[in-house]
Image (cartoon, rainbow, N blue to C red; front, side, top):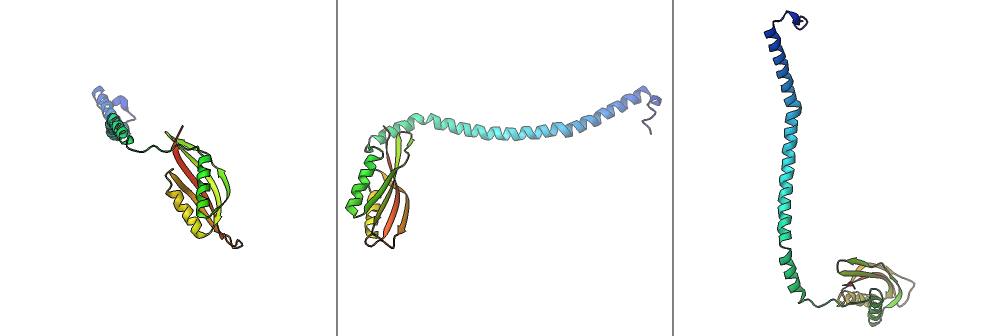
Length: 181
């Protein structure tokens, strides 16, 4: 009830009361606002330091670009050129010839969509072949060992119990990588 009768306080006491209230408000403001801002700024400073380190690393990598390009050009001179093939026709012809040499019959082929990555083009063709186990294994080995950078992306192998001389059916997704025109 001391605050009810402020008129009885002397001017000096009123001033002291106002200063005490101001000190309490400043202390609360320090706790509520300033410390939280300080913590947030410290967190942001840590993020900035980490990003600055990453930025310096990126600048050092960018500075080495000419050196890396020169090394790439010197190495590229020693690598034989990738044979230029027409995406699906040459691939289909190559697989047909391999299948014939391995004693495997080619039932169907379906060209897939080509994907271009940088200076290379990746062409895929889905083949359906039937043959015995030995012939299919020979075909798979020849595809993987081809100098035309052929790779088997997917292989589905099923047994056909009704077929007499060709008990296995395979569906191959063969991918060729070549320089883009």
